[in-house]
Length: 328
Image (cartoon, rainbow, N blue to C red; front, top):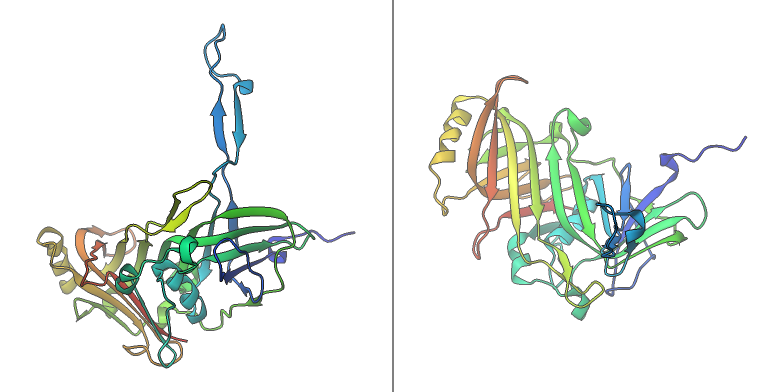
């Protein structure tokens, strides 16, 4: 009896393109994920018809893909290799990000100063993503895909305590039914960033490591395709971010609650979480800094006595809303 095809038989890959609108399949990197969803939603149209009954009839409508924008989404276990791909794609830049002595510094401030125009001059970071099927000629591909949204999460229970990244893409073209990629080299998950490996957590320079429970950081560059039909230029018009931080209740975290009612716009404070030293200058080290204002704080007793803080990111010409420093 023939064996059944399962989810484990699929492979999902990503590769940076060199030219806008030109798919690539040279050295794709396999994504450590359970699923890569690639889809395109058709446009619906209706005829204006006069009938003797109220309501629409199924023959009054049709669908097409003219000017439709394909999308993709995936959630991956983050490691240094994927940080160098995903964070550069999120922050974007008209010139290449470069590591100094294996230390990458990727931030929203540098990105805002050098916004790329991929279609006009092939600058920036955009990718070919492939959902590779074990069945011949059944691959699904999205090309010239840019990251528009990302969510980083870390929890001692969820996802086995690993730092996870959920990413959303919009792309130029969607194709299916062919064989689009060479075998991908799989990104290693032997060296992830673990909750148990966190060495420092600070709020405005004060140590909250012993109180730290979990975090979820949501980031967007406002990425979209606009301009001439069918898919135009990729633009990144607005940086926004928010952080949900959960701390055990303590005298310090209780004091933090007062900031939700007393912040001025220029009172942004840094949240910093580190794996290893700060700055990160050896294998396995990562520092994430998020600048923001506490806008709400809510105590909860469902899972022990904890406080959930909502921190809205603040981004100006001189202030970095988010920065990632890691060693690769």
